[in-house]
Length: 215
Image: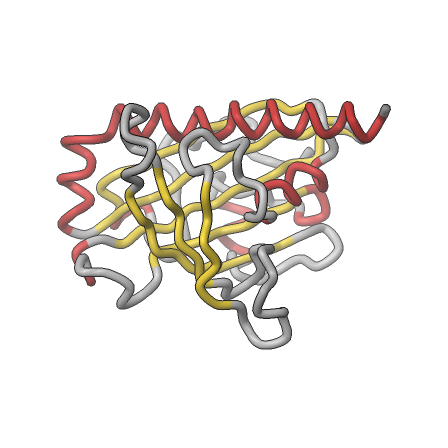
């Protein structure tokens, strides 16, 4: 595995759209998973079945880019989609909608250049060896809601290969602009728990599917 020995880095996490110096809030989670990295990555991208995700069990695809079937439920570069987030488990029928677009996808077979080489090699946030990592990122969809320029955010997932049947999931999000400070003051602890819960749910689903495949 080629990744920073200390994660998150001491100076904080960064993203391309919301670099650390502009971030008011950073959220993260991680987990070791006994399943192939490619399987874990497919589970993240397959929005048709998000029931494993207790925080965001439902996803709506709003638009797919040219070259992708309009009825595809898989996240690809430039997919526009909505998360229906359960922020209060006692009110599962009142989800909070988050409007997003996929900003990056990188795989060992098809590495992307979305993250500059200098950042990959020197920052410590990202896994530098693109042959060992499956990566996806999404960010707020411009003009999708009333918040406008008052909130910016971008979230990354890295699924890092550590063995044939093992991997490490890391996810992080930076939020910036005025509303990010309010989110930090009012929801920081809850969101941190939800980010780790996402990783734990993903671990459970991935290991269940891996055992089913092996059987």
